[in-house]
Length: 167
Ligand code: CMP
Image 1: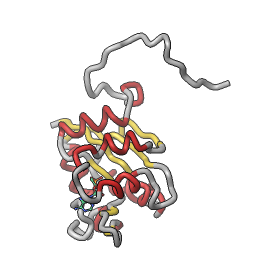
Image 2 (image 1 turned 120 degrees about the vertical axis):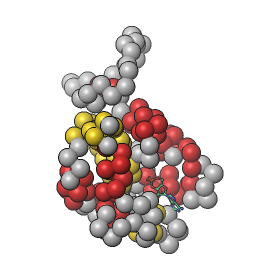
Image 3 (image 1 turned 120 degrees about the horizontal axis):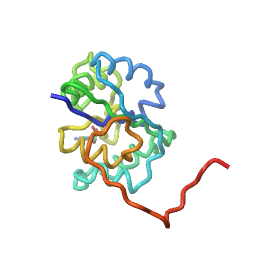
């Protein structure tokens, strides 16, 4: 089945210069990247992305982690992978959320660690299921930033909205 999934290379992945390595590992899936960008994650986006984890004791640290405050690298690389069994394939290549439990040949098993404060620094995030993928992709990307139509869209006029353009 054709699926889509959000992949985030987290600040620890970027600070360890793992981008090329992670992309190479994910390319084994033969999936297509249909959207990609580097962005700074503000608190609002971080809290919305992890809102289902707000009761966890590590929530505050998790928000600081995805914002890059633990690594002095305030950026994340966000991508959408698309194709046959995308969710399963990317999750398998990524390995378990807990890097100590992840298969040692997986991305998290190879490059992740658990911090002294107990946060799983697992270098990348991948969507857990189709419902989460839809919520996350819509949170991180505008429809026009994705080169295929993944979900229904509508056109609205926003005359009052200001936009920065090239001078
Ligand atoms: P991610 O795939 O981004 O989804 C939620 C994140 O919370 C996860 O990766 C880890 O970085 C972190 N996380 C999940 N479970 C735990 C846990 N039990 N202890 C510490 N950090 C966790």
